[in-house]
Amino acid sequence: MTKLKEIITALEEAAPLSLQESYDNSGLQVGDPEMKVSGILVTLDVTEEVLAEAEKLGFNLVVSHHPVIFQELRSITGKNASERLVRTAIRKELAIYSGHTNFDSVAGGVNTYMAHRLGLVDQEILEPADGQLKKLVVFVPHKHLEQVRQALFEAGAGHIGAYDSCSFNLEGKGTFRASEDSDPYVGEPGKLHQEPETRLETIVPASQAGQVLRAMTAAHPYEEVAYDLYPLENTDPGRGMGMAGRLKDPMDEEDFLAFVKDRFQTGVIRHSALRGKQVEKVALCGGSGSFLLSRALAYGADVFLTGDVKYHQFFDAEGRIVIMDIGHFESEQFTRELFYDLLMKKFPKFAIRLSETETNPIKYY
Image (cartoon, rainbow, N blue to C red; front, side):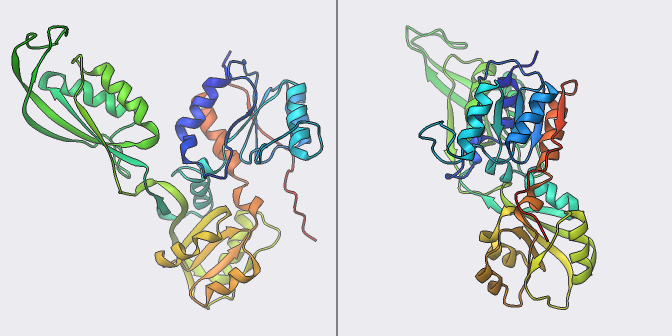
């Protein structure tokens, strides 16, 4: 039977916890990583009803987008919703795992699913992340080059945008003298040695640097591997907040409003003044994304789609863009499908269900 730690590994390979915002608390909320999982219930929010649904199904793991424990818990007495949920989960031996802003911050994550709902093409991250890339340089004897290079790629190195297996290779000679206490792969202790080597360079996501270095060391023949790992100022086109893209067929603003209302099944759309122009370029961000308005303007978007826009923020449109607030829940509701698709791909024979419990706390009259 699959253990919880295996499911956690699959989720965090897709969206490492290092990508979450500083205020966030993604990851395992309740449960033992060594426990055996009987089934997974996927939901946007965790409520008492969701936990009861999981128990009725005989499932002992709930995977949610929004964390149960968002702020520090000083007690578990049941005085608020978080404490009651944690207490119930512990009592019923249910595990809870939440993937929040880390899944907001990856291509293929929350915002990609929103963009797919609209059929956007030429998709790109609206605000690419910085500080998330490193350059690895390692020196490899020629006959082991392919072995080491392939190990790096399989561990997650070498991705640049839509390309993988990216590297640069330069041939030269390495020199070294092994000490008398060493066991060199080539050369003799105490004697200066020259070895034809290749300088292999590739890109490494900062969150995967550890596993890439372990793979490199395991594949490399030398007792001591000579390598350099540099931080880069490049932004990562595959990680960051928000998404932007184009409609294949531009449409009038009112038609686009109706289209969005249908695709996101929202009760109402709050929006700034329409401009009387066609909508082609769309920027979006699931949840509370108004902080990305300047990026949407820089992209040249006709519309910025998000949730939780405050009253005064609508003034910031200033006739340059149409801000559309479809609601927090509505913008993120398809995160359930994101988790479901990911988990089914990794564990195709496992019991995984989408929760049928309505968790949106906002009702429309």
